[in-house]
Amino acid sequence: MMEPDAPTPRPRPRPRVLELYSGIGGMHYALKESCIAAEVVAAVDINTVANEVYKHNFPNTCIYPKTIEGMTMDEFNKLDFDMILMSPPCQPFTRLGTQKDVLDSRIKSFLYILDVLPSLTKRPKYILLENVKGFETSVARNKLIQTLENCRYSYQEFLLSPTLLGIPNSRLRYFLIAKLQPGTFCIQTSNEVLKQFPDLDSMEASYISSFSQMLSADDNNMEGINADCCANEIKNGRDETVLYKLETIKHVKQKQSQDNNSSMQMIQGFLEEELQDPSPYFISTKSLLRYALILDIVGQTCRRSVCFTKGYGSYVEGTGSVLKTASDVELASVFQSFETLSEDEKLTQLAKLKLRYFTPREVANLHGFPPEFSFPEKISLKQRYRLLGNSLNIHVVAKLIKLMVE
Ligand code: SAH
Image (cartoon, rainbow, N blue to C red):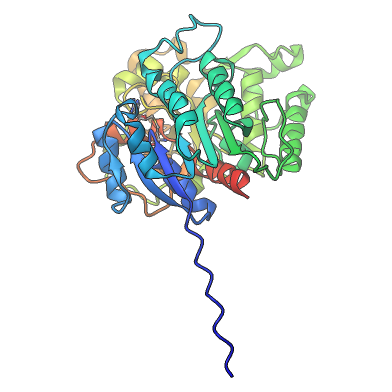
């Protein structure tokens, strides 16, 4: 007699993910990269331009083009989600400021989420939140922690930058991962805000040690710094002395140490092969003259760049690095005695560097967006930079999702 077939086990349903403040879908890409078999059941964002980009890349994901505080309890419950991935708007959250954080209308939606969480028919097993540095000392953060503790979540906070993964872009951000008890993390959680990935101790340690070695290096060992321009300052050991372009010896040393750190990738690996039309990326003469001294300039062989923010391409100051495409021209040679030059002479000098903005594709590459990510054609250059500046580093978040779920 034949044995009756054993009932085939039903495939476990894939975890259902709710992506809040979804923007252009950085969290969705991170989830994909983490290889966790999960499904984004809804992406909520009020920004119609961001939603268009999201739809373009994830045509099958359901977008709720509305405010989070406009979602009803019933809508939340029906989504029956197991995980929340969210990046609430990045306003200044510091306790030192006016403590406006929880009063700020832009955080209303976040407080609403904290109200909703305890009342859900089913609490999600996982929560991941991304925010700017400064959130960790905010009143909003304290309310979040209080809610998580009341709702019986274990959690871990982090302050992490993509540089920890060898990506030559600084983007220090606050992250929190939380897991509903009795679930536990594969790492020992701590009350401290961790400044590195739990499994990357050795890489981080070697980076920090090579970095601090460089900083404390005997001045005579400084390779590569233009010997003519700073011999006196080096002899005097005056690290605060301005060399050129408002940069002190200390700054230059720091940058050199970053560029010599072979555990970091070079910028050139993130650049587009050849730009068909580079003209939209040139920096206007007016901006060049006005901001030349404070531009953060990186070459293709550098291993660093500063954080790209939403004003990149529109505002120069502090919005992200610009690229020196003339590889054979040294910054020091262009900026020597710069202040003494006439405007025309300054422009002639600056033109030698062949500076341009990073393209949106290049910023996306540094943020870890996969090659298949693209913008609908009608999205303007300004809008692309704005959306990317608000987004996140996919590799960093993918690693945290894994850490949270595994
Ligand atoms: N993680 C996203 C970006 C988040 S930026 C990405 O990868 O692109 C914050 C986003 O929150 C913005 O897109 C903004 O439109 C959205 N937002 C801000 N307040 C909101 C609210 N009350 N309801 C819904 N979306 C909101």
